Image (cartoon, rainbow over all chains, first blue to last red; front, side, top):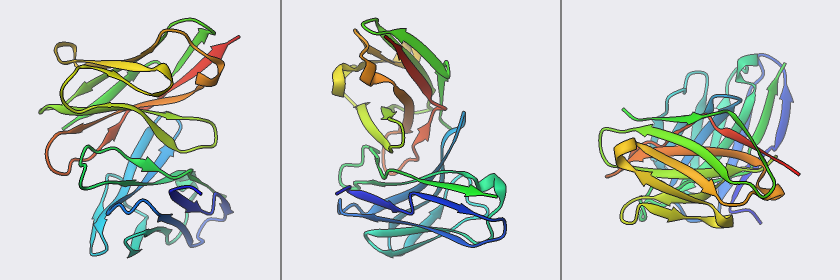
Length: 114
Length: 114
């Protein structure tokens, strides 16, 4: 089983719908992240969390919200999806005790907004 | 501020030829540097990283990279390309010390020609 699991892996939805992408991890890491990948733009940070009570905006948080339900679970929500949120979304974790910045990624959630 | 520039969004090499993927960074303080690889329909995984110490870093699958401070570069090389190396490669940088955001380059897709 994957250490960082994302659900769903693929989702097609319509403009205006609410969408939630879920992430769970078994690595025991405190830090969790949501990234968005677009062709030619690399990965951009949406939100990150250092623990259940610590959530921070990344560089492109507008239109997104997150919830850290437990140390192992970090969900990303699109309250009202729009077509330019069509992208590949990645959840990642890192180990605070190592603090090298190495990220461990899930396999991604491909979202299409029509 | 920090940034990463990857030269060439697409690189093609023949099987058995040298692989060279270029990465230049900017950082106001000593950086930590990373190369990640993304195979089709998968998440990113770490190839190698430089934090401190030896500037020539060896990673998985025969890849290596050299941190050159004077050139602000961290190019990725492999002496002999294999078909299985076909993937997208991302260079990333973060500043050392405490929590620092990881910044990704825009990626380079490597094609290996038989």
